[in-house]
Length: 145
Image (cartoon, rainbow, N blue to C red; front, side, top):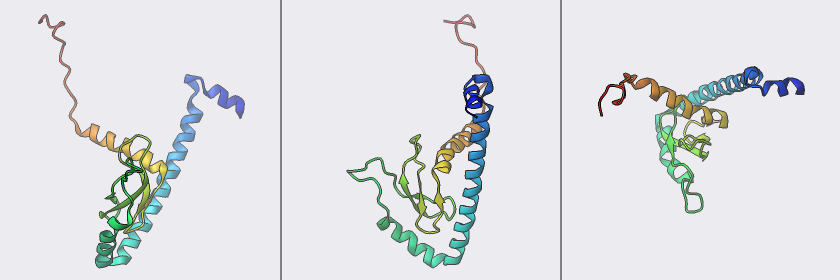
């Protein structure tokens, strides 16, 4: 196996690392789907009144940016229940304001793997929303100064 991994460091043979990465991401996404389903069931069971109460209490329970930890994230909107009650344990590696943590209403838990994938998904979504630019010949090629 070590010999195969050593060969895999050659640019034309990166298949093993890409396969390992794909399996890791697939596993993380399946786990996240289970987390979302469980959180959705929890939110339904709570009812609106209890969810509203928990959302109001979230601000008191969350420890956001402090003088000791200025990089901590504020409460964020939960992607499952929609309440601004997602309490991040920490920021993401890319500094895109997507952290790991748990919603204080529905208890959706975002893993480090999903936190790392979300900024990329957001960038991809945003990039696809921007219409492609038409190529414009540089002034020096068009004979203009």
